[in-house]
Length: 324
Image 1: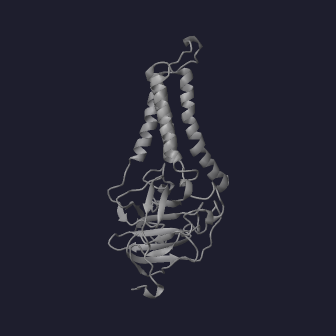
Image 2: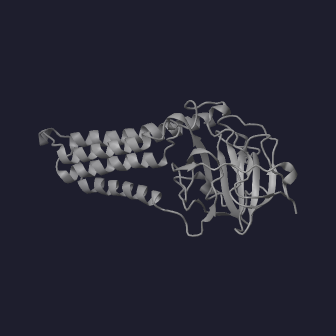
């Protein structure tokens, strides 16, 4: 399956299939449920399905407000179903019903999975950084300490990585649903700023924008800046930067909040976004070593979280770069 078809299929499952499962469970309950505990099992399972979709879906593609709206609507519908619905179909005409407890256990398991995944929270050793993007409302596409919410977990160095995009009009991340032009994405060209003070371990520029959604598998990080953060013993990688936008070079000393570059579409990126992660014992590209959890303003961000940043980047002229 091509990257484009894979991405479209994933969106279809996350934003269509899971909500329809929630509706289907309630519809099935109307035909088969009898007592209140039986109805409660269907209601709980419907909310569990919708919560799972709300948790794991990419809601910035259509509109982030759909996520709480659909979850709230499902919860209200489930409560009304449990409290008000009475099945008037004669018992002899009802389809055969299985035992109630298996459905209750399934619903509890689904709800527990959602809660455990969502409430996992920040690991105790999270490194505090400044948010790496300026001016706007930003949305976490991938992130967290769960495989369900963060596919970066398969990499030891990137296990706590974040992919961040920007929300614009309509609470969407682009002008359109799946545009193939980088400029249609609101994060494209946004200022990327240093999340910590330190020394630029390595900076790479010169790679053009890659195609959407395939990306460039040969240079996965694309244009990037890797910073050895002072006093934190970690290297922070900021990747997929726009060609020709880097304001720093290898060996430069940077201050927190300093303008580094612009967000772009270079490297193995399905669409424009900023990738950031921190690691110890890493290489120049920051792709090896041991991943370290990071937080911004005491927040450990996970998938579907938003963050409002109003910082103005500090511009430093090339002549004032300090090198050891």
